[in-house]
Amino acid sequence: MKTYLAKVGEIKREHLLFDASEAPVGRLAVKIANALRGKDKPTYTPHIDTGANVIVINAEKAVFTGKKDERKIYQTYTGYRSGLKETTPQKLRESDPTRIIKSAVWGMLPHGRLGRAQFRKLKVYAGAEYPQVAQKPVKVTVEK
Image (tube, rainbow, N blue to C red; front, side, top):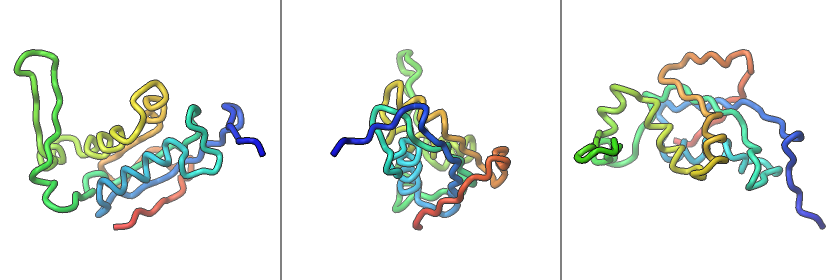
């Protein structure tokens, strides 16, 4: 019995639509990361990008479990001395609600050339409208 390895020309990409309203951020990010990597398909190959294109809508309505909404801290560093910037999910939801989903998914992808290519297939929108309607994305549900 031989192990199946997907080839770049054989990959068929579908479009998946995730609705983030009232979905826990962590559970949503796991489903999205697995779809981007292709781990939800039987043709998964670790060193080839076999994943789907993912569209996330209603990112501003995603929720955290427990007290993470007040206690969690997002950090960025500018590279300069005393350049550490910290923000909470409440402030981040006001300025850029898509960044909450993006940072959760990015933490679950491989940090290299392949992971960056997979991350580029993720489109996150704060509201319910999205421009990829013509691709007829398949709606995926996440347990709440």
